Structure formats: C-alpha cells, structure tokens
Image 1 (cartoon, rainbow, N blue to C red):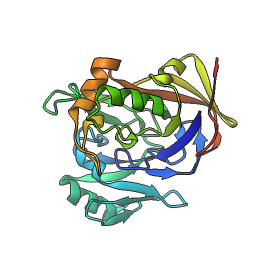
Image 2 (image 1 turned 135 degrees about the horizontal axis):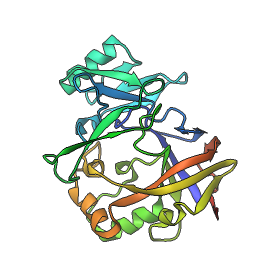
Image 3 (image 1 turned 120 degrees about the vertical axis):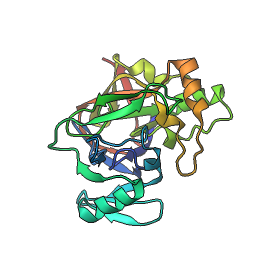
Image 4 (image 1 turned 180 degrees about the horizontal axis):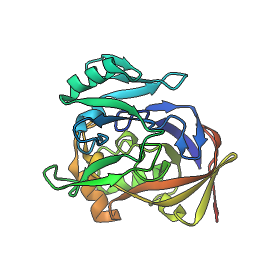
Length: 254
C-alpha cells in the first residue's frame, strides 16, 4: 500500500490544495481547515452542505500560513480582514467573516436531515475545538473503496475530489478496505502512527457540484443502499511527523 495523495483544505468547504509533503500534527494536517467563513447573522460556520457555492472557490496557504482565497470570478483575497470579508460577503450575498479556528470556542455548523433533499430539516452539530473538522483529525480513503463504489453506480463520477479526504491510499485489493482498520489497526507512514476510529458517514456534500464534477444525488443513494452511507475512515493521530506522497503504508493489528 502506498500514499498517493495528500490534500489540505485551508478554508472549510472550499477547494483544497494537493501537496507532496505535509506535517501531521496531533489534531490534523498542518493548515487543514484552520479557517472558516462565519455567517455573521447566525454565528455558524458555513459549509458546502448549506452553502454549496463554497465548493466553487479555492484556498491555498502561503509559506507563513496566510490563506489565499480564489473566488469563482478569479478574484483573490489574501488573509483575514475587512477587504476579504467585504469580497466574501458580496459573493455570498450575506454578511460573513473569514475566521481562524484556533483560540475560539468550538464552532457550530449545520447539515440537512435528508442528504438528498435541501428542503429537509437543518440539524446543528458542534465541531471539535481549534480546527473546523467534522469529527476526527484526518479523513483517510483508499482506492479500493472508490473502485468498489464505482461498480455499484458505474454512471457516477467517483473522482476523489468529491469526497475530500486528507490522505488517499492506493490498495490493490477491492472492497471497503479501510473499514476493517477502524478500531482494530494502527496505520504507519514512516514514523507517523494513525488510528482509524470509525467509518465516515456521508452527507449531502458528496452530491454537490463543484469544478469539473456534476451534481449527482445517486452518489449518496448508492452509498446509503450498499454501505450504510459510509466511505472512508475518520482517523486519530497517535504520533505526528512528516509524510510524503509515495510513502509506504503499513497496517498492523493493535
């Protein structure tokens, strides 16, 4: 098994950036989901679940950790501040602010009760403190799971970008390989040790259109019918360090 892709998402629900190496910190990839766009009316962090247009903007980090946002128009916003907030507010047609995740109370966001119906009830959840991740520090996905899902809905576009993992592991087997790691295995990438905790239950995000990917609600329906809505593994970090694309991935029982 080999690590074939590392992705960080500097601003929650915006397109992220693929990197060839990354620092794994106790609470995630350095720079991952360290910023979010807060709705100044509700106080909640916006996500692609309730604000799908977010997926058409992208974010990168400068070497000093400053976020640079590229809007669908091609305009860019660098760092937090009044100019960035004004540009984001005009784009989203509501008052918003770019906020950092560290040093603020655990933030709230919302998802739809029915992942295929945006008119269904909105349900609030609280994200972990200090980083705008949904549940655990890392999301790990294998190529085996993508291949398996694609056989169940061959007309669907199962590009990895639709599913927004931090780490993509190439596995020659088929089946939902990472499920078998959850709660039972330690994953090693060099000196880095990870502990997959639970399968990731998917939501309306995987149905959303984004650059180069069409809307497809049957993506979620396929996972719901065949795999309890799961794809990928929420993963905790036991030992941090530096990882690189191309690293060998070893899995051993706990």
